[in-house]
Amino acid sequence: MTDNLIESIRIAVADGATDEARAAGANACRTLLAALDTSLGQPLAPAAPPPVNQQVAMMAAALRGVPMDQLADLLIAKLRTLVPVDQQSAVRSIHIPLVGVPR
Image (cartoon, rainbow, N blue to C red):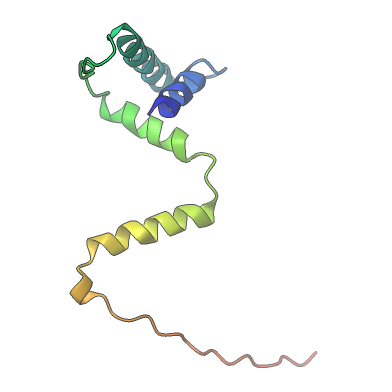
């Protein structure tokens, strides 16, 4: 969680940051300040959730450096959780014969 907050702040203070990114950074600063002001053992006061456009900007910033093959694996894993186990079919390999092309 802390890494996401710090990343939001880093994006917000970068040159050319959008208004949404700056607002997300300000919200991250408030969350960190609330955590620092809380005594040990006391629960944190829940922060108000950021608006949807800030949430989208934060998700996009988090996914910016992830390789495409890893994103595809995450997507496949998420989609598999949405299909009931009894409806999942077994994976079968497909044999595609390669044909030589004359030169």
